[in-house]
Length: 117
Image (cartoon, rainbow, N blue to C red; front, side, top):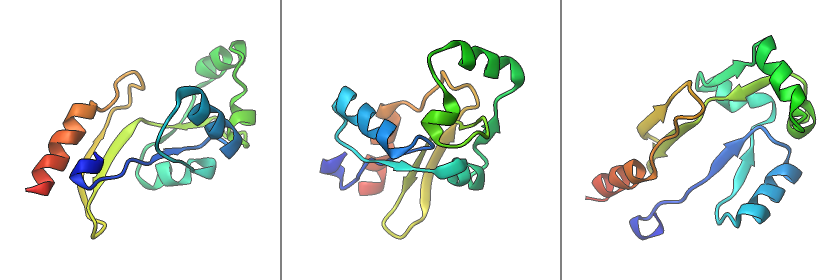
């Protein structure tokens, strides 16, 4: 990505301390910006509220969503990828409401190569 003049940034509703732990544990080389209350996700139409049956599943895990995100809205962002050019124009966007379906990194590289031409 750097060779194509691009930078990667992740956006997460997690408190900064939890993102720092993730960066350290996974040896990430890109920043994770905080989206308090999933407000950025909401602006892009990507915020959703977990239904009660999923809240019960999360409560059964050792994952306290309210603690990790620093607020109790029980909302999460859909995974998405945006390629934004230097002028701030969105050149590519991809999202899927199924959180197990993530944008393919190779597709991002293809978009960046096309923009570099």
